[in-house]
Length: 393
Image 1 (cartoon, rainbow, N blue to C red):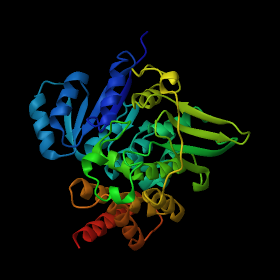
Image 2 (image 1 turned 135 degrees about the vertical axis):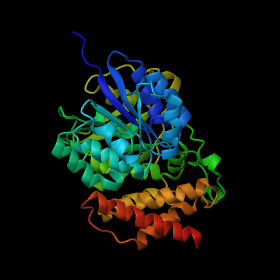
Image 3 (image 1 turned 30 degrees about the vertical axis):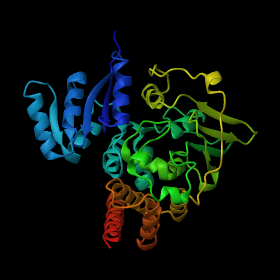
Image 4 (image 1 turned 45 degrees about the vertical axis):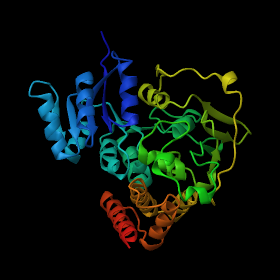
């Protein structure tokens, strides 16, 4: 008797994580099938993915885009086209769905990720903002529903691999003293603060090691990506900020480390290719082929480490301080950053002004207890509105 193929929904399927996920799935046609695909406005890309993977459902967040996709697919494709948040909810909560790749960029990914958690699904979490904004809500939903939450960010996936975990993927902290979160340092690692003032979006998006979307690339250049990952690590592994340390590692070969009380440090190494953590999440607790070349340590020859410079990269400090503040401070930090990065990419804000705008918003938005999704979304909206007003003034 042939085992049933695991049904996977991929949110953000036309982005870099989504494309890599579909690549790994295609390498194992007997083990996985695509149930749902979701994108924002990339109609042509999602159309080609529908032709290749034949999902049950395709979701476009934009209504006009959904109409265009429906017209391209025609009435006999076998794929239903849905639109908006209700469409996302359907492809993450459907009874047939086993696993959800949560790879929608930014705050927009929180409602669907939370819905998947409440439905008890296996969640491959590549949307760090879901934990940054609503970590309390998401982790509570995972506990109450019995969902399995597997981190896909290369750093958190590495930490997960270096920790003991139970059958539901819950990592243990027995003997763990500290987590070392590695950062490449981004394209501006050796730039002076003065030089960074004139940095262009093209320069910020030219990451030395990873191929990523523009928003995440700018976050990497400012080290806010590492700040968000710092927050994510605290939620995922139930760690206080004092037990998470950021270490700059330019080669991006060691993806993160875990220190133990006996003096041991366990590290996960690999080439900088997101298909490795994606395959780990899809196959867990087994390992499956990812299409990634094995690591050649002789060719690499050296591994370097240095402390992050928070004077040049204050976003890391702002993220850590938002963890210490607690409540909705992390959601406010994330929202202000999204507005600031969008303004930078549009040529309306200088690179070094990104952390200045975030800090100004954090100082003025009231922090409250994140008791519900509505409370978190309200804090997010207030922070965005204030950031936009500051940009316009």
